[in-house]
Length: 355
Image (cartoon, rainbow, N blue to C red; front, side):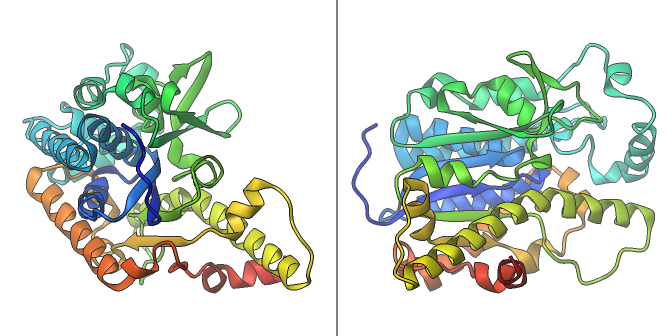
C-alpha cells in the first residue's frame, strides 16, 4: 500500500490493560472512520500490542475498512473464546488474567498460590492457547511488508529490565506473546537468546520510536489505565490492584515527563535566540500530543474487571471507547496538525520547573 499525502496525521500509542483493551478497539474504530486523518505508526504493549498487530494486518489487507473489520473479528473471537465452562481454559481467559470474575474467590486463591508456585511448576509444558488466537488474526508477513504504517511492539528483557522495541520486520507471534507475558502465569518467552516478560513493566506504551522513526505527525495516546482513584484502597486485594495500576502507568509517566522537559528546554533555547540541532530535537519541539481516555467511565470499573472477556462486556467497552473518540474528534479534530491538546506543562509542571 502506498502512503498518501495527508497533512493531518496521527501516530497511535496504545496501552495494555487486559480486556479493557476493548476500549481501545472502540477508539480505533472511530478514528479509522475519519477519512481526513492518516496514520503513520502504531506502538502497543500487551493488549495494546494485540490491537496494533491486528490493526496493521487489516490495514495491509484493506486499508482503514480492513483494519476496522479485523479489530472487530479479533475482539468478538476473544469474547467467544471466553465462553469456556472452566476458568483458565480459554485463550481469552489466559490473556486477560486467567478467569472471569464469577471465579473471583478462586482467582484470589490462585493469585496467592502463584507467589509460591511458578509457571515452570504449574505449567511445565508451557501451554499457551494465546498462540492460536494471535495466529488466527495477525499476518506477520503482511506487517513486515507495510511501508506506510510503522509498527512497534514492546516487551521487557527479563535479565536487564530494559524495554525492547520490535519493529515491523521483527514482529512475530512470539514477540506478541512476549509483550503479553504475565510472569506468574507463563514461562518467559525466548527471542534471539533473551527472555522476555510483559512490556508493561518497561514501556506502556513506547512513545519515542513513534517520534523518532515516523514521519512528522501528531501523537495520539490511547490510555486505558486510570491515572487517579478517588478513594484510598484499604483491603489487601484493592491495594494490590492499585499498585498494579500505578506500576503499569509509571513508564508512560517517565516518557511524558522527559518529552515535557525537552520541549521546555527547546522553547527556552528558541526564545533566547539559540538554535538546536538534530532531527529528533526538531521533531520533539514540533510535536503535538493528544490523549483519548475514558477516565470517568473506566475508573468505574475495578481492576479485576480486566479479567472479564465476555462478548457483552467487550462490546460495552468498545462503545465507551467509540463515544470517547467521537467526543474528542468533535471538540479537537481541528487541532490535529495545529496544536497539542494534552497539556504536558500542566501535568508535569512541577517536575520540569524543578529540573
